[in-house]
Image (cartoon, rainbow, N blue to C red):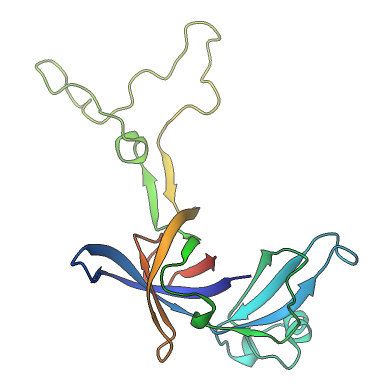
Length: 202
């Protein structure tokens, strides 16, 4: 079982031994502490809850304090589905050495919020033609009606809120690990702004 929580820091580039360059994202990850272990007998499914980060004790409500016990005051608490065969117990700790260089990982995070956007930015519409006689219609969506049912069909691509969605990126690779600074360098781009909570699964 390879799971970890971290925060996105910045993007950079990494060269391998052959001189090939990889775009990469720096993530400050772990250590995380197992706060609860669920199994099929008592909970109906197998999962592990982990805590990450530090929060002032005064800002933690009583149910959370009772749940965490003496394990710590965590900023985040997330649950991961696992196989029932994994031997994990409450209080176990995972850090960046859970992964190895070259491991393929799946990363989930919340993307940047972009507010209310039009169809050109949100859905990559081409917009109207820029020729003579087309006034103020360069970025409009065009007709939204339908000849038959005489209504706007559900799911039609229109303007609206964009971003702030949970995005999962698969098949990324761990390029570097720094135990001293609890840092992972992962190939490719990871959703979100610097400081966004990142879930890493092996």
